[in-house]
Length: 618
Image (cartoon, rainbow, N blue to C red; front, side):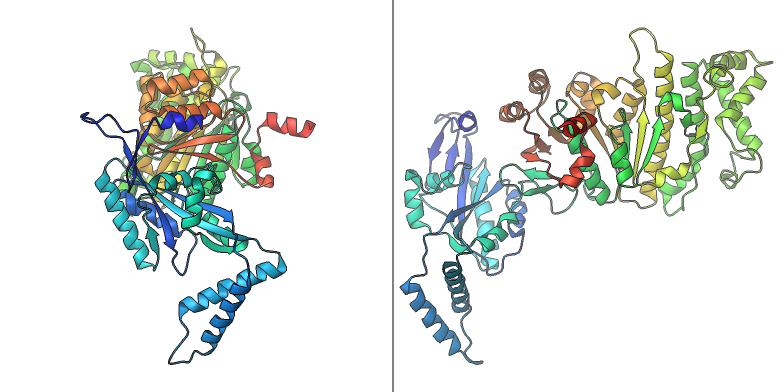
């Protein structure tokens, strides 16, 4: 109730609605918010699961919002002598029906209901319930409420249903839709006497329960969890090709509150939707899930020698449209740029002269393979000469260094990775076919740099990441052109991984540009400061339409309060969720509270190592 008092500072009665938080009369400002409660008086003769979900779109066209509430209570109806008499009369009327004079549908429905009541009373295995369904409309203006009500009435008329407008009963109706409502409390007595619910058995009532969902749940899309209010499922259609908005997703939460668990469950939901997912894993927490779903786990930490060949020219696409033609045309240039960037990272930066020599060496390697820049037919293997590799580029630079000062300077910077102590950095080339898997997980080093200079392991980690980024980007583009549904890139532990400047740059690019390739970026972090404390981060924040908030420390919540347009009550709710594993879902500035509920055998795949050890010890 304390939370309610923070939200509702006051209200004003009206026979057709309630004005919440009205301002003083005569003030030239918005006069509160209007809320109107309707009740279903007569249900449609046939109820299909989810029938109420159609109503949300109807009221939104008028600038209003809809909340659906179903109330259940034990019924006082008994199978008495009067019921027995009524059943006998109905049977007589129905049995007297003929082809030319059939029984009325209402009589048959009433007879069937009374039989259900009789069976419940005699067998005792069914409980009788009364069901009330309320539709609560909220809007800033009265004309919007009226327009939304007209449309709802029209919809129910078309399906042989009827609404009760509850004129002069709005205060009590609003009380009935409260999460703490109880029809047997003293202030609810008149409602109990005047408005009878639909009497049914508990088994039939159970079928009405999943007919409402969250205020912004879609009819399709990945599973996001269940609403804490009523347990209903929430789905968000991240892969709608007709929605041009960025569908990037950011997950915030203190360690141990369920953030990583949620992200793994979400990835499984994405895989079920046909989305190809690329994950950058810092601590090896994704290996078990990756193996379970038939994905590919690639260990790209600096000391194991595995790498993607930067000089690979990606395979040609079928030229079904201009985009595919343009992609094919740029493959040579892309491979050339990838090679130069790799050499630049190895050298910790290049002068203009060194960039020139790096490019010339790579072009000589391509020419040795029989690749002609002006002839696309020569770009795809098998080649007439040796396949282009980073090792061949090393050899070309070393040879040129004997007579060229810039080439010698370049060679002196990179030779440690060719003939020196780090010559195992490019030892095992990964096959390109790995990228066809639905889930590809890259185990990467942190690439963290100190205040003054990079250490060698950080440089190598950044290099491996850079090559992985090139491969991921190339495959995201290919997946779009090949007609794949969608792609997603996921980075967990953002507060640690984004200390790698290469990864931070790539994440920013994905946030701002991945949508045009039918992709989405998913980032997890224990603090929103990684976004809200920098200009680049604010750009990522503004390109995020879906945010998930698990419990956060007060310092993190203060960052949200200072920099993000978030209602105070949502901030309070986040602060109250410690240890609950509940989360606030923000979707295009709408909010709901959910929890991720999956079967036990599935949840075992999502637990982090620390939780697994605790479970095993217990």
